[in-house]
Image (cartoon, rainbow, N blue to C red; front, side, top):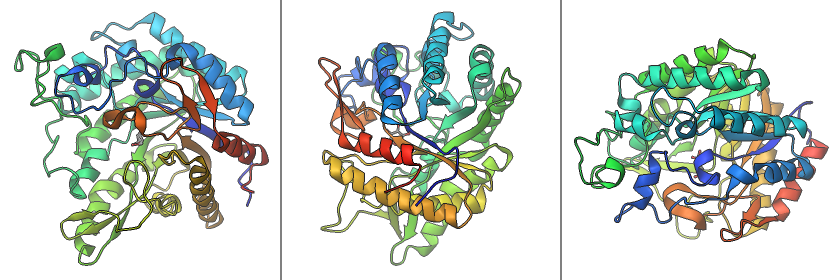
Length: 410
Ligand code: BGC
């Protein structure tokens, strides 16, 4: 089962989940609140901020030829309008390190976390959000654009819409943006945030709003320097109807997935991120049945989801596809290999049906800070000792490296 020539094979990470010391990010204070909804604190994470040379070298040695990572906006613009030259230089060195190793960088400009000042203004719910994000995208591109060939603006902007329509959160959650509490309105909380009102998930459910943010950033990136392909990456859970849930499922697919895929028609590519399926009944998602294998996250082990959602992207986005995330949270590395093999088999079938897929970036390179669920959920190809930062390469990493070298699944 071969893949197209020049196919990108890689792994993905996100700044806040691996870098460590991300003190200016909106989530940092939330992690430290006494009644935090986070089970762990990101803390030093994997110290990838300092150890990226080793991690990128490992990725390249494995045989992978692409690395997706994110710029941490809160480091680059810690105060509104102040751009840290040192932080921008850091990311330039990261990109250069990739290129030195023959690794194509796939750079996400925002992977969930935002600067605290942006959160304080109302986050994506603030009418000024497109301008704020656009200004940052312009500054980042001026500094880095000449080295970039693939850029993603936003990671999973449709997450809140999808969660609303599958019933994971009540309708209306985040419609005004989730960062509605200004420090003035919420005195007493850590970092100025009131823990009783501050919630996670800072993308707005409104596709128009998030599309406006995306467009502004895409324009800034397209103004150069450089000539990167620009797109956004969507959370594409494979939504399937359970008994009696046909109508609800159709609506969830439309409002949570398809409306967002259609935005990508004007882009250079669409980023597909898929882990599992949700079966939708009349009241929302139905948990996997008794005895159905699940990941550490509780999601069904369902690798077929990848080809299904790639097919959906072909139908509605109609632009080239980059699989920017796919993987499995498990302590059983053989199960990770089996899952990935099955997902790639499906991907190859989609390509056989005509899908223009340019690459596959496995989630994730390193066991890392899995947001609210903390460090116990291990999606990584490489294990990390959180005390010593020592890395241990798992068999799945070597397996994926062999796939990459062969450009085929054995
Ligand atoms: C996110 C990652 C996350 C992964 C697994 C995706 O929704 O982009 O940041 O770690 O899923 O939950």
